[in-house]
Length: 91
Image (cartoon, rainbow, N blue to C red; front, side):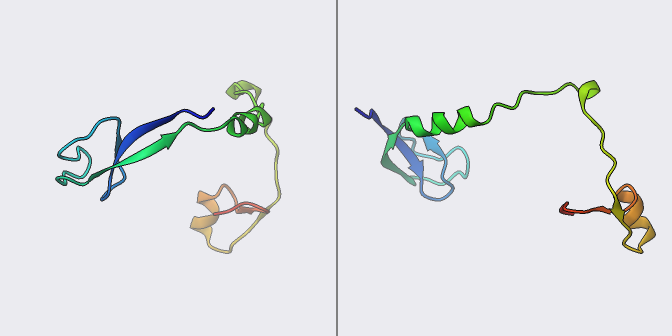
């Protein structure tokens, strides 16, 4: 059975609190809290987290791969980007 809780959410900024507050500490608006039901995340979200099993890697263990770079023709931009735009990257 899913356990539900009651939370109070500010209508102006979305700040959430477990109890009703007269003044929102985030946006300083008065009487803007409304009561809502809160349901904890289901087991599916835990299953999704299990899919990502990447562990942190030490900087000394990071593999450096040289990629071909596309020159933009703008010297300053190429310098900032490390020699040009890497294919498949977003700048």
